[in-house]
Image 1 (tube, rainbow, N blue to C red):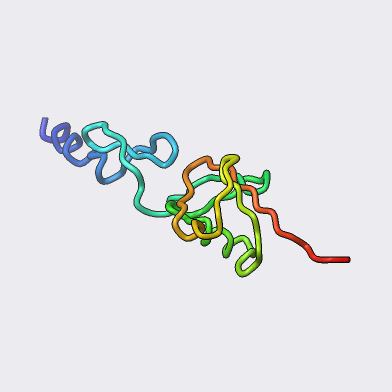
Image 2: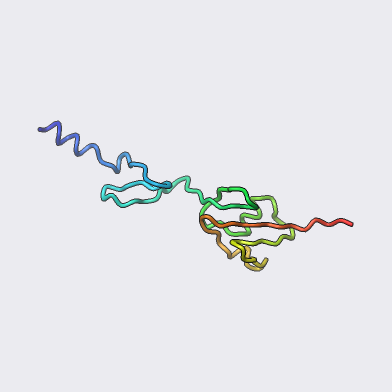
Length: 106
């Protein structure tokens, strides 16, 4: 009996959480909780899948994608995001972002 009781106490899910769906882990109560490390958000940028940090703004995405400092037009989920909103518009999971930049020529 002592061995069985010891096994039950040491096999806690807090020591070794069980993986759940999409980066979720189950607590002792069975309620899912998010991992606090290496969490990524999935978006689509110009038709290609891309991972970025949660709460990424349009301005941060432009910088990371190499469009920093360029004159671009940005559309998120078929809605134009004005340049004045680039620093405040936060992207969400599954957003579809289109970036168009003008190329000069003659």
